[in-house]
Image: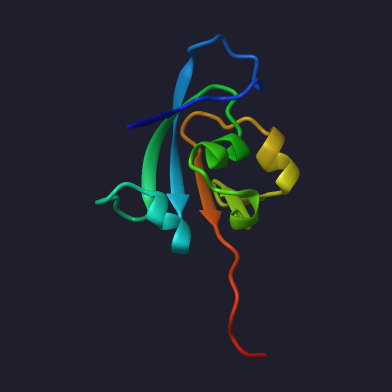
Length: 102
């Protein structure tokens, strides 16, 4: 299990940790360990970690995190940076999607 450092948000005691599920799609799934099933990885993060901090720890630049969902609900860019994640939540990140004909 990968352990990620949280930033300064959340106000939790140092060292407090929790587990979340992370789903990466399309080209972002290349950042998951080999053998990962269903595009899903369980991560241990410090309380107070934000979606943006998780993205940074995985080396995902903001322009590649085009769409972030937390338990199926869209996160704005501001929410990605400010809203602390909670134990058991699922963070799904999608890169920009293009193509198709109008």
